Image (cartoon, rainbow, N blue to C red; front, side, top):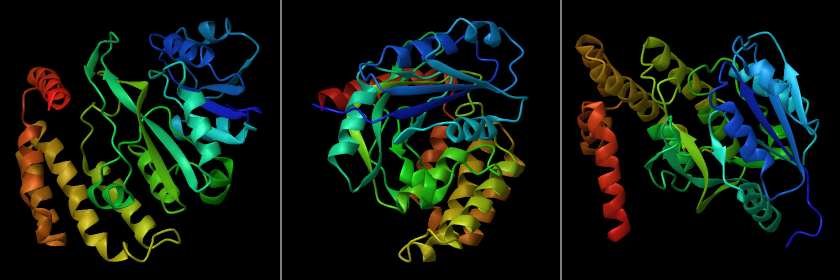
Length: 313
């Protein structure tokens, strides 16, 4: 049991999310951990968010700014923070009551770990669980090369890490978190806690499922690849994988184009992936392309079926 509780600063950037924000806020206020600096940055909301924030207790620090985007809001929040540990929570996600206690305790006991994150259940807009235990252990190679990031709500990291790598990159609009975790993952271990300690909400307004697939997505992935592989943080063991990483970025775009019925763009992305690295068009990539065309109304039942199978196997 911790005798002295180090301060942790959690930042929630919000914009026009009055429908979900109260549940998010209550999940932080109801944490068993009693030394939390909770900062909410209102990024110029035009709905009833401002009225709701005015009802919160003085212990919650509320910052307001003109609409400048998620990255700018999060940067402002972290800039105003003073915790030994830092974290962020999206304005529609939920922490379970012992999340912060469990994760801070882990970092206190594991000095070589630079960050930690919990397992999550995915919930829909009504709070119903649509997929259990969606997390998995962190792999820097998998994140950098295969474009897969499984770090969700509840992740926390040391302030020293933030001081070393900086915050989210304002050039990244679609996946600033994954680029951030690339840099963090080069400093040391990012430990996965298999206990479900957070709920990750997916709905029509969330970027994670909104189907944003365009040339901008590919351009951002290539920007991130250039920044990482040519930058100071990339381990020498990964530098030779740049072409494969860019190929896989094009395959991510191809899945989206196929899902959206944009067959010309789909073909272009496939050919670009092959040009960067023919080995990228493997069985795993083909399987993901097949899953991309599964009708949306079948995805949740299939996910629940596989969840039951995993629990019984």
